[in-house]
Image 1 (cartoon, rainbow over the protein chains, first blue to last red):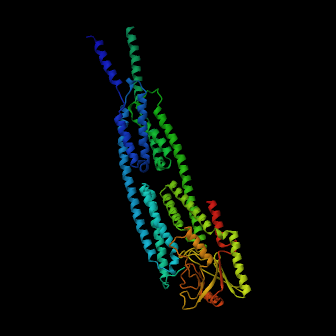
Image 2 (image 1 turned 90 degrees about the horizontal axis):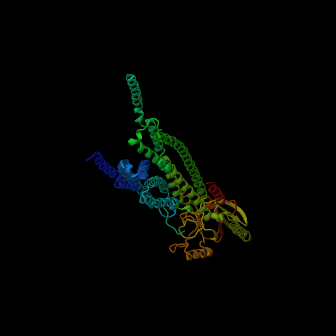
Image 3 (image 1 turned 180 degrees about the horizontal axis):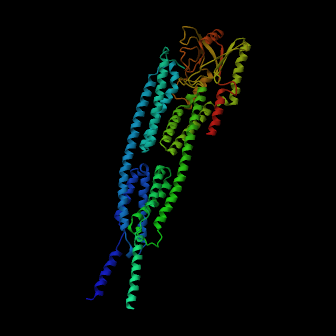
Length: 205
Length: 382
């Protein structure tokens, strides 16, 4: 057996091996899935800059696949693609966890603010209900309208929570709480004044 | 000679080896660390500016390029170049740094502009809201606005909260909605109280008052005219003005009375149907009016029929001109209230059957019309 007959099969085998290099589709798909899951968990909102970067990594990965696909079969090397896919997947999974944590925190803060606002509005409405009927109630009519408005605004907090817009829900709830307290103070002051006068009988007007 | 040739060969090989050794570090030259750090700094600046939230497209563009270059930096083949080859990666990093720096400068300016816009808008809306509260309070029309003032207040608080959190776009959005809400309030007031600025309506009211004064002159008797916009009651005798007193109206008195419990003070031609002296009324002294009159009943029936008044609402009654039961009371449930010292003077000068004409306004430049005009101007300015 001469040397040519030995080298030729080896070269052929090498050629076949390199010609068979294919993109790591499973890893790419896994990375894409992880990025998509991160997005669904709110990463684009709660870790927006990190999410933009992982999207950038995914874009770089796809470009690399495209670059390699454009080469002659024997020169293709998807090793870098595989590295990028693994890194993107890992980053996306980390972002998913971070976004979920931040979203849960935002939700908890919004729910707590909602509860505080609900309690404040309930206290205000209870004060309004305590107000005397008849003539003396006239001065409280505008305050009553305010209390009803606050009660109606609580629905907007719930709507924001339902659509997962927790920052809006929280700021709205805090605003309702503050306003509700102010209205309660107004009612207490009005009741204190009214208490000095004698109560009136309800009359047709 | 062979020795000479060998020496030359040795020299050539020696210099060659030296040149090769000299050039070897150039073959493995990494991307300059300062170029990477410069882009990392730009990235930090952009994150500090919250560019991903504030200008997502700009940040995405930067992040895509940065990640593409970073992947090249990390790849082994990009770290090796021949000394005579241009360092494309370094050039690309420097370019990204330059573009990023421009983006940072632009976004900083844009963010500052947005912050300033939000701050100005909040201040403008807060001023406008304060003005409106004062003006609305001045014409006792708070109840006309229903829940709107609280909605506006909540939006302004939200705008302030978002501003303090550095979320200027959301702050501006909330402030804009508060401004829209204020504009809606102005429209609502104009719709509900526009008759105070309607010349034909005012001419009609003036005619009602004139007729009442004429009746006083012809019958040589007392007559009373109440102007709701001016909150003034005027007593006439023999067609001559005797005295004017300031009055307080219903808690929703600026409106036209439509049904029981609406807090409005009726407008129309009435008569004193009975007098209640001390001990006969809780309000010091009272002149009971014959509300509802035939015109009130006709309007009430029509509005009930068209569904404008709920079926559960009665037309109401017991509208009086009376004194003060409790000095702390600012308003009535729909009556006309005078100070007790003035009430006693009026009480002694009118009889059962005395005409009492209540009108919205007697002059085109009445307080409600002026307020509506001011609010209209402010609405256009906002």
